[in-house]
Image: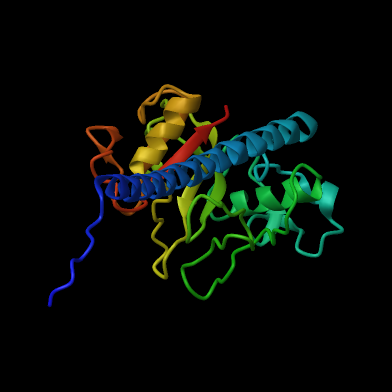
Length: 245
């Protein structure tokens, strides 16, 4: 004899589908919140470093790292020799902050002067290989997405076109977010194009080529026709610059 097998009723199936929908919706909403929090963390960092750099310049008359008389202030620091960066702590005083030399000193002096927290050596992480910038050792880290990105300060011009940045032709001081360099010292992108555009739109004009937020290529392509390539969003492609000056 065959026993009758009870099937799910329409009400029971509806409840199951509702539960599945709630779970999926919760996951999507959770991911959106995490994404928004990561973008906001970059915005918060940019604002923090902007204020620190402006306050530093107001007190010492130079951008952090460019200060030609840093030794006069911080000679007591063991790594501050009376010579030019990176081995010494004096900058060029020319209004430009050179990446991989003066920028590392800049983070060190922002910390020593009490404008930011952290621990920064002021010098290259390892002079035996091309890697000179190490997040958490001589430059700050970002919590945007693992592996962590890193921040640096620099001046960018169209003539030098650092990472294809699109600021004006006049040198501008900026804080930039990029990924950790590889063993060949290639600067990787840090933000996904959609996130970079979302951040740009939230606090600027949404365009990679104008305003004080500029997106640019790392070792991969972030931009297409000068704008964020939001169709190519599988990985972190964009270096993002926050122009201060």
